[in-house]
Image 1 (cartoon, rainbow, N blue to C red):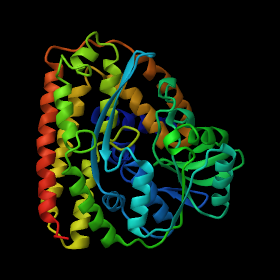
Image 2 (image 1 turned 180 degrees about the vertical axis):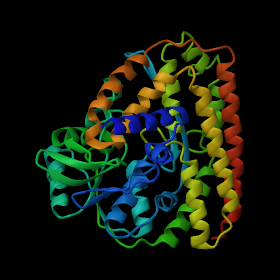
Image 3 (image 1 turned 90 degrees about the vertical axis):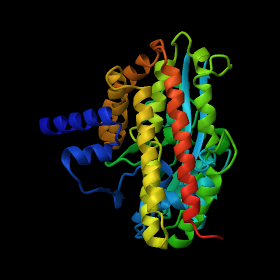
Image 4 (image 1 turned 45 degrees about the vertical axis):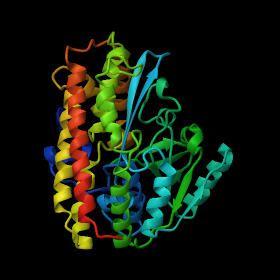
Length: 416
């Protein structure tokens, strides 16, 4: 038992220092470990919630497909920035979109499964009873289901009340077990969730209330799907929208340093209130240690390398460019929440994420860490002189680098 505690502590310490995911940090500390199987379902983990959900359903159905290729098939990368201010709680959260169609979860899932040629049914209903009954029927028929529970209500992330109704990410439900279900949220050990809690979480967000994708694993049409996804990504990121395409980074780079704009960061965070939480939300969003897999630029680069061999296209150059961009995002996250000054915030965030990866066995750890974390996020942190302009410069560099990387991707793709 002592050895397990020491291993856990070493893994979490590395995550807090580097921002790595639990799986990556564990591999560096303890080496590769074989996946666990829970009642016939193998827990493979994963990097990004939506692409991992699809990849893990296909793997468990006998059709092993890599997560990076699923991610590419879904349209690859996106861009988006929103600053949410919660006046009632005196806090602020930065929401970043790093995946194509990040603001449309059903559209992404429908598009990805359709491109791959994987059969699925979508169910939505306003009634909680009907939604619960449909989930039970699909599980009884042997079909794993992708659902979208609200992070606050689903419970195991131990999110604060301030995030009630703010949404969540896709997870796989693969087994019903009395008054609970077994969930695959990239956890590496079984995660059992109270059924009433899951039902409430599914019903909370109006834009995708009770949505369910029941998937029938089948051999995917990889070549066709991946090429379509690459073209989609190149077109999408070449767009002019400053909300949902690359210009969003340029707009953010200006807003973060603009003291005159209503949403300018020097004005929003003039007294430091909410700044610690906002900076932590950036770190969580950009780095793989967060709830949804980080900035995805490395995941996409891995997909480009695999797609090069699959399609016979010269994608090595764009892959290298996006890996470089991933490094720029990492540097930006470190500047936003430096490890030396924010060690405890990072340690507590890591404790929650690691506990989820450890399944139901980590519940007590997650609850204890979350309680301290959300209290600490409320502390005022006055911005240092030059802090906001320095962040703006980093974002402007990221915008230039991503624009060049997308141009290289377009040039590598064959004409339609």
